[in-house]
Length: 326
Image (spheres, rainbow, N blue to C red):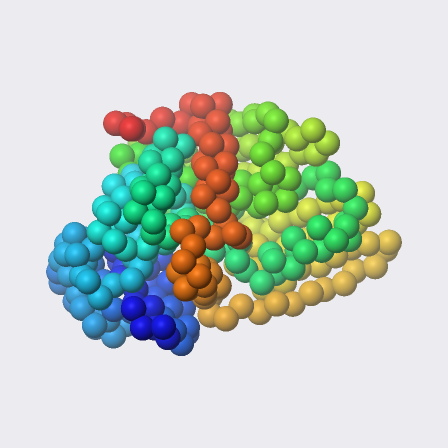
């Protein structure tokens, strides 16, 4: 690996991969070196569009390419565990799309593989690295809002094709793992792990959840969270403390700023992102690899374990089950 260039491979060439590689092109030290799909034609089309050096018709071929430093995995949830472990065992660092896996057990196995192979692994919670989110956490930690008592966040929109990938129960589809993990992550980075979870869901005929409502109970605070594939919401978020209230501007998970309301006054803060905002998690991957770290200090292996453990409890409460789950 050249000191100035980190070569990326991309596995899974759906919508989020298109967004990711557009931002990858904005990072001077990053090179899109190879892409892989189960369809070589799809790989060739994608690779030509984004000027990838190589295109592969199987994931394993890409993993074996000796030039690749890190693999971005953007396949459906149920494949994350096996593809991540295979990639790590092939000597590659890994950035795996959220949710990192479909349950705690799978996540633990992936982290164990990262430690065994001494290779970097991070869940692609790009929102965690958003400049506005970084500033929000700084202001909370500085005590600008007083003691945080309440977090409210949702992620909801209408899915036009209720028989597509996003609602395919065999791929661990549904609103919770696709979108509900974002509100869970926000509550977690502000309040930590809850002492109690209450959750309920409505379901598609496939068995995937189409709506999930969550109440997280903390010792001195509460969070009310929601995910949905059946109707849109404002997709804003509110953090309330004893000294003030902070509103994260919509769409909050890719926000460009926030407002603080305190003592009858409102102050707006603006932090425009470079590209869509995947750039910041990419830069974090680079920092960690260059510093020979196997995990990020901003989104650690334990953070991934904690959030998926909360999601497991939400599923237990709501009755959301995936077939053939290991």
